[in-house]
Length: 269
Image (cartoon, rainbow, N blue to C red; front, side, top):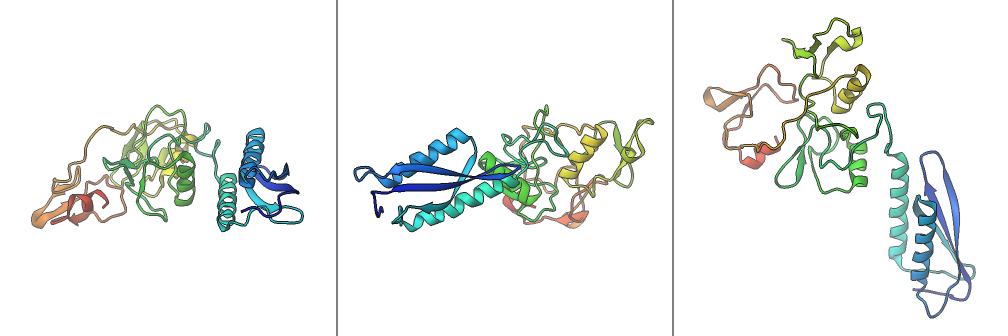
């Protein structure tokens, strides 16, 4: 694992932060033959990260006159650490256009997604590029990655509840076209009429921030009954068809035949 052990090892760390990146050199000093080089290297990196309080990724290993580590897994670890550091610098972890207090990644699921008994988060109306389900056991950083890459934002920090983004905000009523129309005469023109059918959750959050709106809290604690013939509020028609209510704003047709569907098929539909 270690080659020459008499010379000093230098470790170059690239620290990622929102505004800039800076290189820091960690000097290990002479590598003792009686002590594992990898252990000394790890301790030096841990100390550098702790003292700088930044995410670090190794970008270069160099030892004058020889190679410190030759294990091929080191290269893979360096590449992975670099990718994580770069992603961390890209992700919006602080305030954004929709959330002045940042996002709450302690929630199990993205905003508007439902947590199942199996530990999966299922999307309601979702038009992102990823699958419409994801494990709820992701770390906070993995949730940030998923939200960023899949256009699946989490609730804002400091909110009193999880919201039902499929409904009109408080003070608005749904009209015959599915638009949310304000019941107040003093509201600005841009906030008077909202077509929530065309807005993603992220866009609804931005509208809520701009227009000072409050979407209703989601009803928690209910258990989906997939033995029912049709989805909630849908009407069963002749021939096994289910007809959607006028307020439906999903991306599917207004009628569906789920005859013969299993509970699992219904849960991910």
